[in-house]
Structures are given as C-alpha cells and as structure tokens.
Length: 287
Length: 314
Image (tube, rainbow over all chains, first blue to last red; front, side):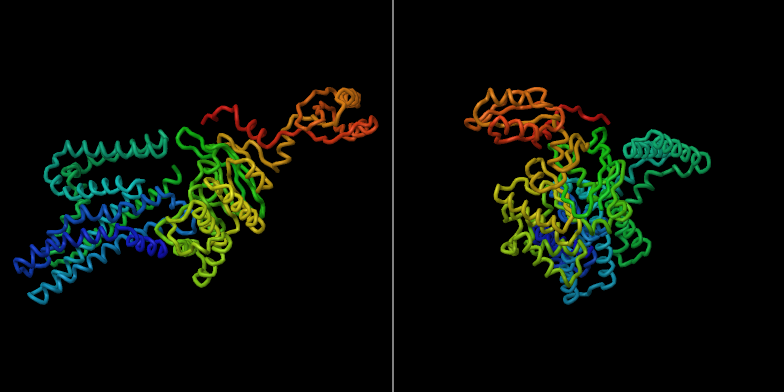
C-alpha cells in the first residue's frame, strides 16, 4: 500500500495534473479570501469555507479522474493485480495519495488564517472546526471520485460522471424539499427500489431463481411493513436522500460545533465508497 | 508445479477458454501457440490470477490460486501482452516500485535492480524516462519487471511482438537463458518462435488445447502415416523400378525436386522400410542422397489443427 501511495503521490507532480489541481484550488480560494476577508477587512474566516464549497465540484473530478481509470486503460492494473498485494491496499494507497494532494493544497490556505489572526481577531475554535469539516467533506467527495474512476476506463468519462455525481449530492437538499411525502408515493418508491435490486441481482448472477427469490423477499418485506408500520413509508424518499446529504451536515462545523455523529457519518460515507471501489475491482475479474 | 484443471472462461455467451487442462513441471519451457483470439492471453491472465475462471481451478505447488493469491503471486513473474509500464517514471524508479510491490526485501532492492538491469541489458538507459524509450527497450523493461521479484515461474505473453528481427533474436536468447533456471510459459502466434525456444508446445484454437507435446514429435504424430521421401541421383526409371520392388512399398509417386540431376519419390509403405530401401539401392548401385519420413512441418500441422473448425457453442 505504501509503495502504491508513494508512486501515486509522485505521479501527481510528474504530470500537470497535481499542479492544475493546486493552481485551480488556490486560485478560487485566493479569490474568495480576498473578496470575503481581505477587502472588506472581515475576520470571519470560517465563513470562507462556506463560500468555497463549490470548489469541490470542479476540483475533485480533476483530482480523481485518472486514479484508477488510467491503470485500466494503460493495462498497468495487470501489474498491480498480479503482484502480491491486496486490492484494498491498492485502492487505499491511491485514495490516500489523492487525499494527500488535497491536504497539501489546503495547507497553503492555513496562511490565510494566520493572516487573519495577525491583523484581526481570529475565532480559533471556529476555524479549526471549519477546517475539520472541510477536510472530512473533501474525504467523502474524493471517495466518490475514486469509486467512479474505478468503474470507468477513460479520464474524461470519469471526470464527467464524478462532476454529475457531486452535483447530485449538491442538489440533494433541494430535491429533498420537493419529493412527495405521502403514503402512496412512499410505497411506489419502495416497490421501484425492490425491482431495481432484483434487476441488479439478475444482471449479476443471470439466475432467475435468485432474482425471483429477491423479488419475493423484497415484496414480502414491503407488504409486511405496510401492515405493521405504515408510517414507515411517509417521507421515505426524503429519508433516503438524507443519507446522502453531505452538505447539510457541514453547517454545524463552520459554526464551530463538533458533532461526533457527523464525523462518524463522513468517515462511514468514505469507507462505504472505498469498499465499493474494492468490490468493483474484485468483481471485474469474475465478469 | 503448475496444475490446471478444466478451466473455462465465459464472457456472456462467448467462451474464451473452454475446458482447458494441463500440468507443467519444474524447469519446463512451454509455448502456447495459436491464432489471435485462440484464448492464449486469457489462459495466461487466469494463470497469473488477473482473471478468475468461470469453472475449473489453477493450483501452483499444490496451492489453489484463489485460496493463496499472495503466496502464489510471489512465485510468478508476468509480462502481459502490453508491458504494464508507468511511462512517466525512469526505468530505475519504475523497477524500484515494482520491487516494493513484489515484496523484495528493502535492503536488497538496489542490488536486485542492478542485477536485473544487467540481465536484460538495459543498464545504459536506467535513468531515462520510460516514455522516451524505443519499443524494444520498453519490452525489456517489461521483462525486467517480471524478473525483479525473483519468481520461479515466468509467464510471457507474446514477448517478441512488435520488435525488429535483431531484437527478437536477443529476446529469444534471453528467454532461453532464463529457462535454464526458471519455469517459463510463453505464448506466441509465430510458429518458429515457439519451436525455437520451447521443448513443449500447446496449440490452442477456439479456446481449446488441440495438441500438446514436443514440437518434433507433434509433427510426426499428426503426419499421414507410412510415407517415405527418397531422393536418388540420376537414372529415374531404374530407381523407380528398384523402389517398387522393395518389400513393403505399396506405391511409388514422383515428387518435384529442386536438386539438380536427382529424382525424388514418395513411397507409400507398410511399416518401416528404410533399411530395405537402403540395401536395394546399394545393390542396384544407385546413389541414395536423401531419405526421410514424410512428416508435416509444424506449420502444416498448425494450419491443419487451427482451421476448418466451428466456433464451440456455449
């Protein structure tokens, strides 16, 4: 894992990619710092992070687009996968390399905080909280990008889909407000979910019996829940979307509130996506 | 050492490898021969654990590859069809990385790199970026990559494809040398390459192994039985009559020859008649300049085995 990490980190700076990422990130960050803090002489530094969150939409696809897709395109994955290292080690090494580039870049912005601290009254706890939240949020987005680069074979496709995935996560809170909350739509949603899972099973196993069993179990579970706990279906769509709502949880960090549950949430989100990445790579060998 | 039992690989309805089984002993140099798309690369990818099988299993030194992937991968060096190179690195940087992921002990990495660079003769380009190297050098870096973990088994997929004749000869010599203390499995669609390097050939076609054995014996085994080619100097008519009289010769047919002043015949025979033919010619005072069993060349055998078969249905 360490060898993969080191090579990947180095390769960011052997290609223009690492510099492009850093340049873009710091350009936008510098711009917002100038306009948000320097020019209006505002010491409210934590607010700065709220302003530059959108940076992820552009910067993360750039950071992760070739992480795993290029290995496949250049067939170097044949070297990695026939070496005595675990797939989880490969994925983790690569993920940590991308994450480190992000951390190095972010470290430059600490200078802004110092600047504010020298010339004004820096809310230290608030700033640390905002940094922590920002880093955790970045960790989540980079894990999504890593996953997408594992399912694509082309940098451009990878960047494109990562952008849209992040955009979706971005808009989730808006979508949540408009999804219907009533019983009927909740039931329809559950039914669609069961059918989708069944199709997924069938596509993977090509086994009608397994698919039929999944369908029956799913339908049974929905029916049972309907009779036992009808209220479960009220607002189910909104609840599911809430699981994916990364941004709504960021708010408390920039207020200087450290919520343990949110930290756990961000870490779990990242873990799930990295786990899925490993699974995708493992599964491809069986395809 | 390498045991393959009934491996099958399906991609949807397409069968890439169909019920292939063989075993390879320590120190053998084995060549997979077959037209493009015969399943050679898929078989090699399965042997190295890059792909899994749909059915069947591979064991190396008695260990199934799925249960002991890491132990087995330590024993293998693999050069895939496209050498897996990180072109933005220098040769030394790249080999250092490969040595690390192959689990070479940290202290021995520099000496191991120097050794391998010397073996594949790329010491002079070790500081250059891989992307600036010629195809032949890239292929050698690929070979170096396969060797660096000091594996017992080397698997090379089309090791000479895309190289110029001089490079091909050099790589072949290198592989032959490696074969002295490694088990080598290589693939090729070039026939004389396999027969030049390997003492055992497996001919693959449409996902199956259609022949397995020593290249020379294979050709004899698959030859039309009981034909003898005889070349005699001068007097065609007398030679033909004498040959026809030899006991065991059932038919004498003329055969075109490029030898000046000589005639050539194909004899259909019943059993081995070579001593009798020799005696007959000798007592008739005819000069016998050549006599050989009519075997198919490996080329003809290859064409016969790999053509005119239907795609195996799933």
